[in-house]
Image 1 (cartoon, rainbow, N blue to C red):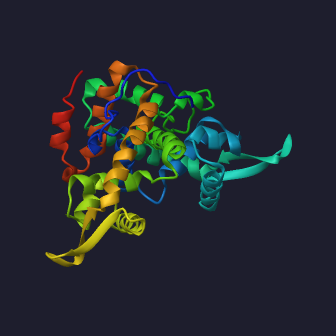
Image 2: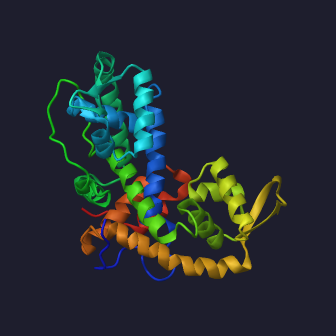
Image 3: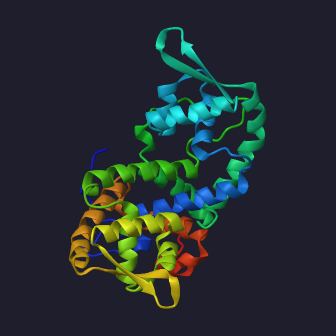
Length: 320
């Protein structure tokens, strides 16, 4: 993935951009929305990555396991785990490749073929709900832009086959959001892995904007669950980036502030975060980036009433 230097992305100025306009954070929030919708609309215990593997095998019977990993944007370990779980469900079968005994070939079982006609419409409903906040006239363009940001063209392509087993293509928005987050994570690791993680940056960004914020409210604004918020706060406090004290209005709660050295340190981090966002969006024409980030914000905040969707709509007015 090669970086470019043309144009300027939304949220990529030298100073700190509002968190609601940082593409990488919006992608993380959008994946959280997708996960919530999936839990509400898809029955059973099937996960998004598991469905992605089933979708590939619905189009590419007897696919090599490594090819499935590439097409689903899963690493080797994650693919092995997903395959093992689907085999325990008796939804996929695995056999040695007769041409090369070191490789495994995967295929759907009859049980999966029976289940997918029921599951696929539910997964499709998740995608529709995910894109619902985006203006109808923008959805097709947004999906194409999201595929570009996810570097879908860099994945090994496969021929789309109409088959009697109904599955969604790997251009489904939820899958693209997961792939885009992986791209952002890779770019972040190259630029900032030695300094902090994306969720840690979100926490520091929120605390900087709201000194003395309650830890519970911090989790809401940073789009982190209670356990993750507590873990991130503990790590940042251990590194001397956050001060914690009891909340006088809640004996069990904590209020948070940046430490003195964290203020300057964070000021040095902002440009590096902006560089990651620039690289993430460099695949889009400069004139298209603001519209893309605005639509991504609608997806990210559309299912999060506490996050301020009205403020996002004001910042990114709808456009055809």
